[in-house]
Structures are given as C-alpha cells and as structure tokens.
Image (cartoon, rainbow, N blue to C red; front, side, top):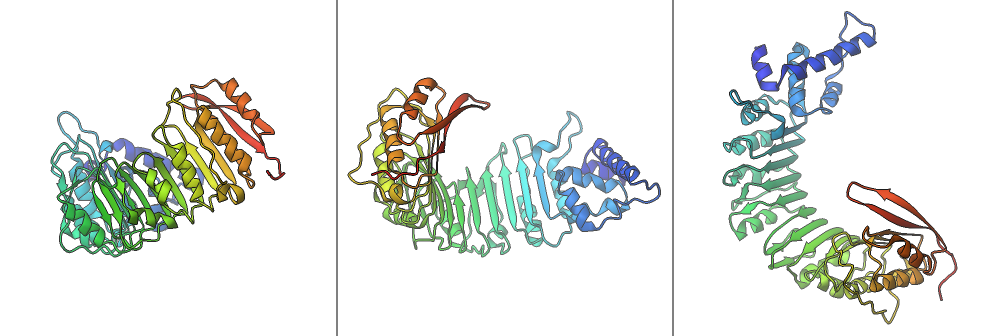
Length: 438
C-alpha cells in the first residue's frame, strides 16, 4: 500500500521533508506524545495544504492515517505537467496521476481545477473524464492549457452545460466544437487563447449561451458579440476582419488591441467604459475620432504608429470626465521620425476641469512630444501629479533641462531606476503651482 501511495503522490523526499517539518513543530511545542498538528481541524489543515503544490499536498497521504484523506478534500487542484519528471526507463505517467487523484477527490465543491500539460506529456488525454469529474464536483473555475504535440483536443459536450462554471480558460491545443445546446448560466469570465474553432458558428453558439458574461478575452477572427451582461472586455486581434457588439452591453473596462474594423455598434458600446487600455494603431483610430467616452475616468494609450497625436487629441476631446492619463510608448521607439502636433482650437474639457494624474512612459523628447507635454501641463488646471520616464536611448541631461523649462515644473527631481532590461531616468513632479492658467 505504501509503495502505491508513493508512486501516486511523488517522491519519498517530499514526504520526508513534510514529516521532518511536522516533527520539528512537535518538538517546538514540547509535546513528545501528542501530535498537535494532526489534531487540528480539517479546515485548517486544508488551508495549510493549499500553500503547497497539489502533487506535494498529495504526498502527505503517507504520513499517517489521519492525513490519508485530508488532501482529497482540497477545493483547488493544480496540475502542472512540468512537476512530474520522467526517467529514461520507468516514467511517471502524468496523465495516470491526474486520473487517479481526481477519482480519489471527495470535496463536495471543486472551486478550481487547473491542468497545464506541455509537449513532454502524452497526447492520450482523457479530457472527457476530467470534465465529467469536475462537473460532478460543481466546479467553478476550469483552466485547461494543453500544449501537446498532437491534434487539438476535443472538449466534451458536458462542458457546455455546466451550470456552476463561473470562470473558463482554454489555451492552445483545444478544438472549440460547440454543440447546438449551450447553457452556461453562471459563466462570467471567458478566456480563449490560441484555440482552434471548428467553424464560425461554434463561437457564436458559445457566446449565446453565456448570458451573464462579464469579461471576454483574446478572440480571433470576425466576431459578433451578443452578451448583454458583459462588463469587462479584452480584445486582441491581428486579423483584418471585423468585430461588432450587439445589444450595447454595460461595458466598464476595455482593453482594445486590434487591427480589424470595429463597426459603429462596437464604438458606441465604448461610451460606458470608465477604464480604457487602447493600443493606438490604424485599427483603433476611428474609436478616438468617433466614440463618445462620456464616462471615461482612466485611460492608458499605447501608440503603435507614427501618426497618433491627432487621434490622441480627439480622444481627449471626447473624454470630458478623464482624471487619469498614461501614455505608454514602450512599443513605439521611432525617435528619428518627426511628430507633428497641431494645437486644438479649444481646450478639452477633461484638461480644464478633471485631469488629476498624467504620466508618460518611454518619453522620447521629439518636437511633437514636447509640445503635447507642454500643452497638457499648461492647460490642466486640476493636475495633482505628473511623471515622465525618459527612454533609455535619449540624452537625459538635455531632456531634464527641457522639462524643467516647461510651465508648472517648478519643483522637479530625478532618480535612477534600475530594471532587468535597462537603466532610465524618471522625472516626477513633486508639486504644482496652484495658480490658475489664464
């Protein structure tokens, strides 16, 4: 029996380390006859086991009869294929381990099941069995990441009828073949990353069965989103197709990184967002020009192209309540190309009445950039904090001098920031003059 448990739950080394730890704790409380750790209630022991990997938690089953079944009540199970080493002669079968441990699992509710398998694992994956066990345990969060050297794995139809599922992540070698009947009444968060769709209708059927969906991330290809409760969307698409949203869901947060055409319905749906992360490229320029960001409070702009200043100013004009503005220029580093800034005929309302925080990452100091910084500082009457991080390829001393000469930089400091990639200087405005700009 001991040998079977060791084969199932891992090496003797792991179990011995846990046993030594328990013995040391026993000595520290000066009790040679009483195992106080084992006497703890199951809930507390489960909280302890949740702090270590699932494979090592299972190894505690060999410690004593008291520990043999504790781990089977764990509400969260995480299987990483890289955790199970395989020798040249007698390999530990990762898939067998997952099968056996899931069958031994007894918790009435499985809060989370995460299975990550890499190319080193066998392609003989019994996802249908795993989904069946998880559904029987009323799973709430399901995460399959299958990077196998095989054809995409087909998910069982039962997955699309799981009424307890709140969070679903599917990654890589998974074939999304959605049946006609889809009912995911509790699903709020859906992540589809590098999956394969059997056909266009599969994605449509999947979304139609997610009536309370709040967050949708990483979709590819032409898409029509019909999720009335969608609150948070992260859309990343490098194709040249179209994207549309119907029924105008109450979006609150949006990350948009697309090169495809966003139709009028999609752009109108952005009118409710309060937090926007926008990759400013040819596919999203129309959003800046035509969308009414009437509720936008926080905005992060990442330029991806040379002609971004004009749509950026349009976005400011269309965001009257904006309080936090970040320009992140890490992706765009064309310091040798000129930028042209045309001052708008009227100051955006957000600058006059609301903007409180302004930051610029990887500032390059080109003429157009300097004019934008100067304009924002001169016209932001409610500004409380400003920060500029200079790109590592720039002349730092020259940038410091130029920034100090700008209006309202009356108290400025510079500090060297260290990172794994580069060294860069960062300016942060310590205080602002509280006189009004006329």
